[in-house]
Amino acid sequence: MHRLVPEKLVTIITTDVLEDRLVSIARNRGASGYTILRARGAGSSGEQSGMLDADANIKFHVIIPLERLEGILDDLERLMNKRYQLTVFVSDVAVLGSDKFNRPLA
Amino acid sequence: MSALNNLLIPAVLFFALGVITRLIRSDLRLPPDLAKMLSIYLLMAIGLHGGYALGEADLGKAFNAVVWAVALGFALPLLGYVLLMATRRVDRMNAAAIAAHYGSVSAGTFLTAIAYLDNAGIDYESYPVIMLAVMESPAIIVGLLLASWSRQRLAVQDGGVASIETGSNNGQWRSLLHEAMTNGSVVLLIGSMAIGAISAPASMEKLFPFIDEIFMGVLCLFLFEMGMEAARRLREFRKVGFVLVAFGLLMPLIGGLAGIAVGYLALGLGAGGTTLVAVLGASASYIAVPPAMRLAVPEANPSFYLTLALGITFPFNVVVGIPLYHHLATLVIN
Image 1: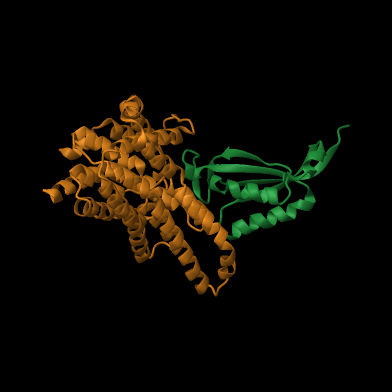
Image 2: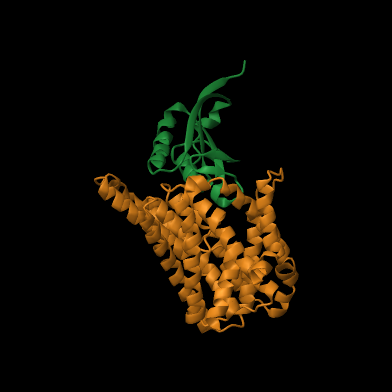
């Protein structure tokens, strides 16, 4: 039997100009790491074709223990209150080798 | 006749092909980073070229060109903001973000104008290239100032809710200004100009195959892709509305006239150089400014400013604007 440990996966879809902000939020809130993918699609900001700097999106993943989740969500909500367009959702995941998720990046 | 000639150069025809490709729903897809790669090449080539020419140019005149470029960069977005607010169809934040685009410049339009002048065998001075580099930043700064001023006005209207936030905005301001001044295209353009100006002429000549001979071909590819991107925006016309579309056609005319005044009256350039300054005044940025506005003015809707700059003003300038400004510049000078 594998030892699966429950964690929270926060997924953020937004414009890639916010990448630096998201990275610093994840770092400051004690995330152990993050993954960024290029994304395209359409939504409230119109079509995001990913062909120009101006309309490229990213999908930002961070896995974090439940007790550190609130802090990240607070920061993301602050961005949303400034009227940045973010799609944020949190899912329950189970991770293998849970030790590394408890070690903050820096 | 000259208007038709402008349309019958490969770069413009490729722009049209890009638009058609999208309209007939061809399955052609370009690699995602192509536009970025091509614009890096184009900026580098035009920078090296301009720097090389500036190495032999009059420094006083170059300084003058810089001063006037900054003046245009500050004045045009302010004018655009006032016009947009007068329409009463956009809110302050959208007006600030859109106005910033019209103070900044589109290198794509500028290069198309160079292709037009080359095709017509018209000489042009190298000073407009340095103005191209200078005009990216002031408009971004004006956009930031307008947005922050508008934000305060809105906060006062709403009873001061947002004023709590302004204290923490100092650090953000510094990073936004830093971004405006160290914007990728500005660094690339100014850096290439410096390299072009100080390199030994003999070693620069070795670069000519890279910066001269393949230049027009790369421009064709770039405009092809921009045609596709512009057509992609056509769909959003209805969302933008008639008044904003009218602004996207009127503002380049105003900017073009301002550019002619600066090019001819203030800088004493010939018909070619004056046309290029007019194009600088008329064009709206769709590479450098939109990301800056997305970061600095999140309240504004990106589909408004992108549709205007890329879907309306850019095609207008390429097809109608450039020959028109050249015609006007020739009229004024004679």
